[in-house]
Amino acid sequence: MNVTVLTAISDSRREAELAAGLHDTDLGVTVVRRCVDVADLLAAGAAGLAQAVVLSSDLRRLDRATVHRLHDTGLAVVALAPDDQATHERLRRLGIEVVVADGAVAARVAAAVVGAVRDHGPAGPPAPPYPADPEVGGGGGRLVAVWGAAGAPGRSVVAVNLASELAGLGHSALCVDLDTYSAAVAQLVGLLDDGSGVAAACRAANAGSLDESMLRRLSVEVRPRLRVLTGITAAHRWPEIRPALLEVVVDRARRAFDFVVVDVGFCVEQDEELSYDTVAPRRNGAAVSVLRAADLTIAVAAADPVGIARFVGAVGDLPTAGQGSPHLTVINRVRRSAIGRGDPAQQIALALGRYADIGEAVMVPDDPSTADAAIATGRTWAEVAPGSPARQALAGLARRIAGDPAPAAAPRWRGRLMQVRS
Ligand SMILES: Nc1ncnc2c1ncn2[C@@H]1O[C@H](COP(=O)(O)OP(=O)(O)O)[C@@H](O)[C@H]1O
Ligand SMILES: [Mg+2]
Image (cartoon, rainbow, N blue to C red; front, side):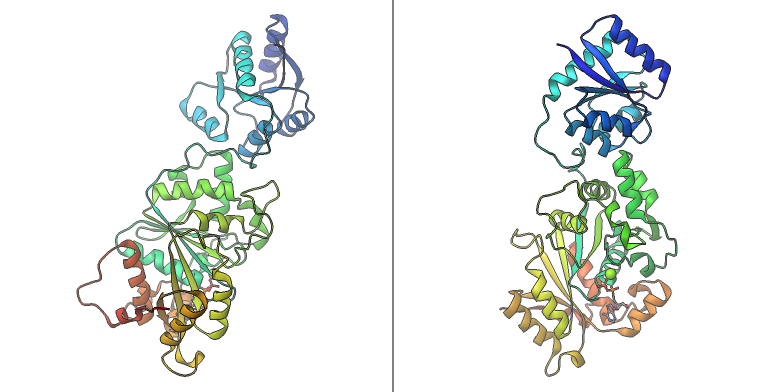
């Protein structure tokens, strides 16, 4: 078997020595091109010049996307690396399975290349643009997605206060701002810093370096047990938040926190592409993937005729709809003045039952003074008005999600959690 290889090795002396060693000893492996960097390597790979790549672990800009593109063009990838566990771990996370010691003799490298080419086989069908992360699937934390239709029904306020109430109950919680149209979580908790935690976490996921402690470092502790992963500060940065990377972020978050509460914004249409992930980025992909993975979706609607109509029109199209995954509806800013006659909660419940087949909703009263005091000072509702019915409704929602019993002296708001038959 004669195998053609590309090399991309940072130490050029080592590269020359290895190429000569492979050539002289006639091991059936020939170096057809020595590439100067990742871009050169990708171009040579795409041109079909070789069957395998030998690269050094310290190659600049080596990330998961690169490894995947090399694999996708049919190349087997062999890394030369120092004998330390952290490097081997990083390479594994990048999707590189075959690793040979830095200083190995040419015969050893040749054997690894031949084995890798045999195992890799010819290029298969196009795969998603990132290799599967080997660790995804563990972690006991629960993923709660907070969604709401267009307008501003209060998704971010619900997400932040729900996470803070869960923290107040003694659970560790991470609130993630994944609204790629209008991030708001940082402001709601009084953070002025303009970096994006979620973009940084996605970059680390792409570099194969995101673990639980790195995720903790990239998030900000805003209250005891409550951390926030801030959103993208400029809406045009949305391509940085790719579903396959976010999957890794969510996985690490689930390992590190009891609850991961994600503000997914309003737009979850999947008109761009129905498949899971393609080379072209999709703006709503991240929100869609979180909704699909969520243990619970909180769907927030504004308690006025426009808000309810938008909600009813959109809730059926949620990526989770029809999959039997649990939904909880929150009707926010409930007030008589926007509904007209009768008890507003009852009127809304009737409409939900009739038009969306929703039999149960948590009603959060309109409370501009609490909401404004909170937003003006970057504090939570529990901090600015602990006894307010609006805060009590969200505290009850948190207890319900956490499975904690209500406190002994049940406040009046409990009557607001209603069951309505449709
Ligand atoms: N129950 C409520 N009563 C009064 N104002 C509220 C209530 N819930 C949210 N608000 C206010 O509504 C505005 C929009 O809330 P936000 O959570 O940012 O909406 P979204 O994330 O859906 O765009 C904010 O100014 C917020 O303080
Ligand atoms: Mg918002």
